[in-house]
Length: 264
Image (cartoon, rainbow, N blue to C red; front, side):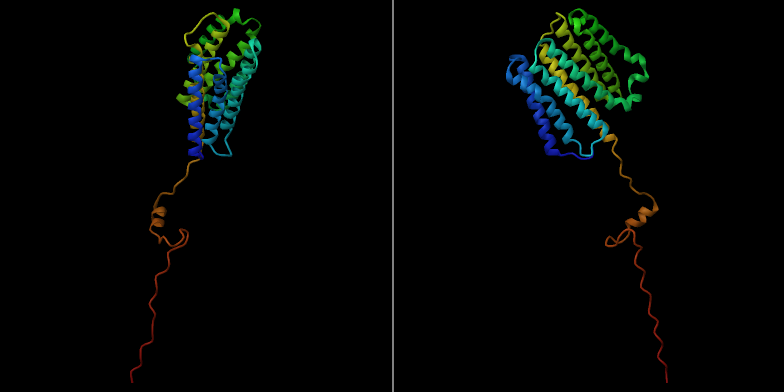
């Protein structure tokens, strides 16, 4: 990382912990309360604050794209609170579909490190999406096409995220599973005990893991300082500390030749 504002980053991390605990507690006891809904809308701003305080301008391409992905994630969290029914669901899927696109753009340069180089490993991802779409087909109705588009973007993001290391791979898989639970909850009669709590917990952890993968890659992209080694470096280390390193050492004083006295 180019710079880290440690107090600010600690404050952002603490804010994320607070709003997450408040929201998860609310999902158990009062899922429809004002506090629960507001805390859900504050999760992504806290994540964005963590990323901003962990980096310094000018921020790299991957950090900027990650921040845009978080922006649309926040829209996906917040806009449904102002709507209801199919409109709320469509708004959420649309915003998160755009967020997945920006995550894909961010991770695309590292795709050669992903499981795309071993297509057999992509099959479990495709299987998950295929099963979810099959189960959701009847209940989704006219929303099935948007559901398919969102599912495709989510699985592509999860696959490309495997090129971002263990954190990225885990974050992508967890986000895919979380999205699958949302679809099952919205379009099927399958009821998962503690569904809202599990979905939100998986959502927060997946976003944190994707953020950490981005920050890790940002750190790896940083130029390294080059230190000189060899005989010249050893010689310069013995120079007088009071002299600039580029100046040669002061010449040794030469004896003064005096004429001898003439004897009479």
